[in-house]
Length: 244
Ligand code: SAH
Image 1 (tube, rainbow, N blue to C red):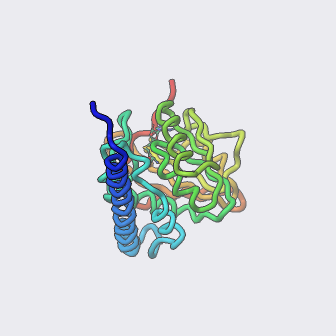
Image 2: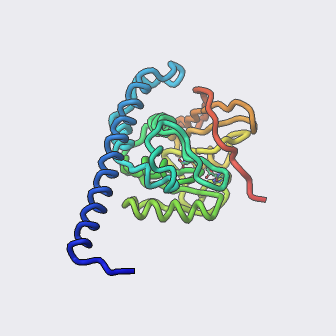
Image 3: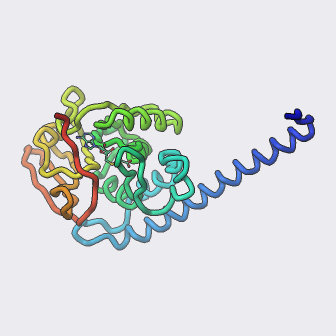
């Protein structure tokens, strides 16, 4: 193989840099389009959610997180389509619209303690971190916990903690939490998670049997500890698994 002359090497480098630059620009433009689409959809969210347009902070978070860095390399060109994508191990990265909706429903304030069950790619984790909350995330598949940790570090979300465990039991040592988000569908609301919610806290969780239509449920714990639940809308999530 002949060696490149310095001028050829510089030309090669220039082409490489231009291509990388163009791709980054494409991603930014695609991400902006996605935010515009979610903004429009947010105004049409079903009345049952009580939402009239998404919180500007949630939209800004979606606009800041590089979703392409949380999907497999080959799927990067599709990273800003408003749909779920496969991330390996039979799991999926959630649809950005659903990520925005679930995040909005938690009504987060900076500095709050948040528990996430189902780290998956780490994308939802990053969106939560953008809101200035302290995220504790649990993933049951070790390989996904490891890759999510790596992607979160690469993209600069170093303050989140990812644990490899069965999230059904929550994280008692770090409880209580201001908010809990579950991104896999459970057959019932896990009692340990309700117990680990602070008074005044909110939990969003898809509930439903495997292969059946699931309902996104908002669980609220009142100041006196009373718990109320509200079914918001039909959704489709991978099942919450249990460790034997
Ligand atoms: N929020 C993720 C969605 C991932 S899909 C994202 O946007 O990428 C749901 C994830 O929940 C999967 O990674 C699955 O392995 C995980 N999961 C399923 N059951 C679990 C359990 N009991 N505890 C923790 N994670 C679980």
